[in-house]
Image (cartoon, rainbow, N blue to C red; front, side, top):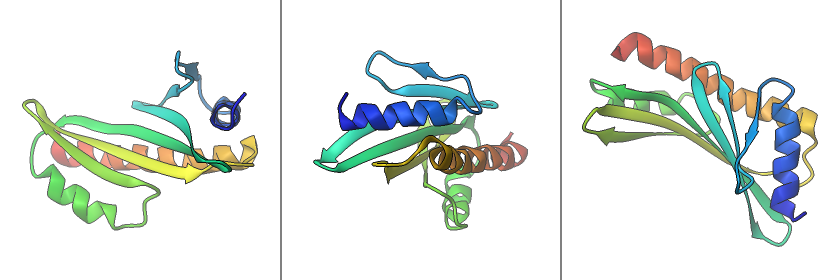
Length: 132
C-alpha cells in the first residue's frame, strides 16, 4: 500500500469511530456528518509528504448575499477554507481543508477531522437560518 493509501486507511478508521464510511473505487472516502456530505482524498505530494484533503458541502442552492456573509465568516478561525460557487439555482458553500497526514494515528486524526466537519455543520446551521 502506498503512503496516500495508508493515510486514507488511517482516516477511514478514524472516521468509523463516528460515521458510516464508504470507500470509492479510487480509494477516496465519503461520509455524512448529519446533513453534511463529506469526502476525503489522499495524495502524495512528494516523497514523505502525504496530504489528506477533506471537502465538505456545507450548503447548496442558497439565495441572497451569501458570498459576503461567507467572506466575513471565513475570518473567524475556521479549520479550512470556505468557498462559494454560484449557479442558476443559487449559491453553494464548500469547506476545504488539506493537511499533512504522515504518521497520524486514528485517534488524533479523528479529533482533527471531527473539528473540521463539526465546524462545517455549525456554519451550515448559520447559513440555513439566515438564507432559507
